[in-house]
Image (cartoon, rainbow, N blue to C red):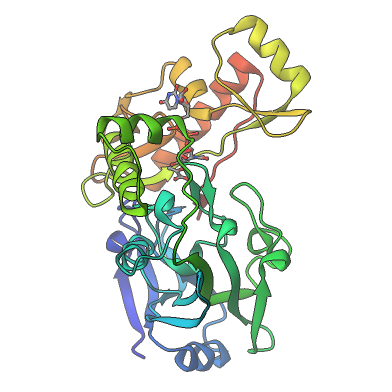
Length: 337
Ligand code: EPU
C-alpha cells in the first residue's frame, strides 16, 4: 500500500476532469483497506470506484482511496442458476462479458455501462429494461465505524430507480467490497421488449435471440448514441428522468402533445429528461470545450480541458431552463464533488 501525494485524477474519472488529489492510494486487498481506515492520520477520505458517475469541480483536499479489489468466483450453483461473487474493483462491462462467455444470463441488457462492480449497487445501475436489483443477491461492505464486514441482502438495500440505501440512510458509512449476483445457466429470460432492442435485433436479422445477441444489440445501441468515455469525456446520463404526478403530466401534455412518457404507477409518470433538454434547444450545443452530446441530450460532454465548475454551471442553466419552460425540476444523477 503506497500513499502518493499530489496526483492528477484525470485518468480516474470518465469525465476526464483534471483536478488534483492531495493524497492517493490504490487498494488491492480488504485487509489493506481495513488497516488504512484504522489510520486516523487521514480523517478525510474520498472513495473512488470506476469514477464514472462523478463530476469533480475542485481539487480534492483528502486521501482518495481507489478501490482496486479484483476477482470473480462461483459461490454456488444449481442446475439452472449460478451465484457469482465479483470483487468491487472489477470493471462492470468486463464482468458482464465474462458472464456471457461462460453462458450465464441476466446482465446482457446492462452491457457497456461504464464503472465498476462495487459502485453498481449504489445507484442501482440499469439500462434497457433491466436494473441491477433484478440480479443482485447481496453485497459485502466494510462498516467504516466498526471496521466489520457486513452483508446487505437485496431487500436491505431499498433499491429504487437510480437509488439505494447507500445514497441515503447509510451514505458515506460503508465501502462495498464485493457483490453476489444470481444468473441463469439455461432457459434465459430475455428482456427484449424495449423498443430499441427489438428494432436492433430485427436489423441484425436475429429471430430467436441468445443472451449474446441481446448484448450485441445493446452494445450497438449504446455505441450509436452514447459517447465512449475513452474518446469523449462524459458521465453517462447527467440527469435522472423526472417522475411527475399524473395531473402535472396531463397539463404538460396539453401544451406539448408529443411528450414521450412511461407510467411508473397509476399516479406517477416518468418523462425522459433527454426529450425536455432537446426541446429546450440544448441538444448538441457546445460551449467552448464542453457541451451537450449531439446524439443524446441527457449526456454532458468534455471535449478536452473543460473544468468541472463549467460543466456544473451548464447543468444548472439546463435545470433552470427546463423549469421555466416545463415547470419540471430535473435532478443530477451524477455526484458533484
Ligand atoms: N429523448 C429525446 N432526445 C434525446 C434523448 C432522449 O427526445 O436527446 C427521448 C426519446 O423520446 C427517447 C426517450 O427519450 O425515446 C428515451 O431515450 P433513451 O432510450 O435513450 O433513454 P433515456 O431515458 O434517455 C435511460 C437511462 C440510460 C439508459 C437508457 C436505456 C436514465 C437517467 N438514463 O436514458 O442510462 O442507458 O435509459 O435504458 O435513466 C446512465 O444512467 O448513464 C444511462 C446512460
